[in-house]
Image 1: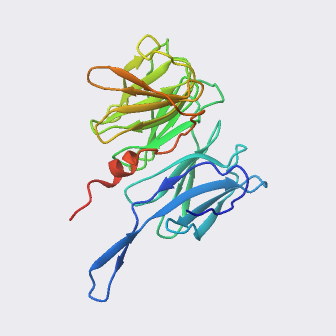
Image 2: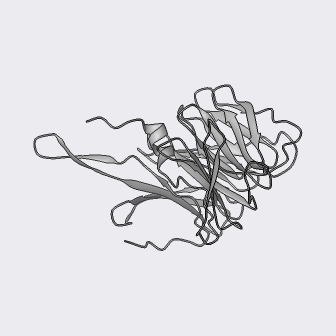
Length: 266
């Protein structure tokens, strides 16, 4: 529908819930959606863009000094205020850009395992907490207390945490490279289970993950050319093929946006 050229290596895509537009009588007539993204500026910084959803016009942009990692901001999501949250590849930092005035925070990401690969998968949960997944690690940042919590994962979990999304029950589902699907409780930041290849038949190369309106968990598998669809209650799995190298970390169902914003009124 539209194409807006940006700098090379633009990665994240995070839609806002939109800006209300009112008519002459003061009543809202419609909502104008917007989308956040980011790209490195080749000078060691990241540029964060806010685009108009209807036509791709760049509404605003800001520079985050020293945020690079080779890709600028690698993964991104929005919170209930339509603020942008994201993290730079490999070691961070975590970034927060406010929708209202584009003021920002740059927050260091801890390296609990001394792996030097602490940032890959990313999302924001229902309480506005940012989740950052790395190699064998998963961490939660709570902006209300400006504090980090590291999930105690079992020794057998050695994967890179890739795409991730929270469901309506407060469980975070993570695409675990080489191992399958990791499940974590978001409020307690505690491990729930690891669903491995014995259940996920044809598992090859997990990438992104999202929850649909029925609560099913969809994990795209790049090398299997399809998606594993998991029923979280029964653990029944269906494989949907016919895709060509699917590769996504963003909110591919729209559930993450609904989860942080809530049910629309009216």
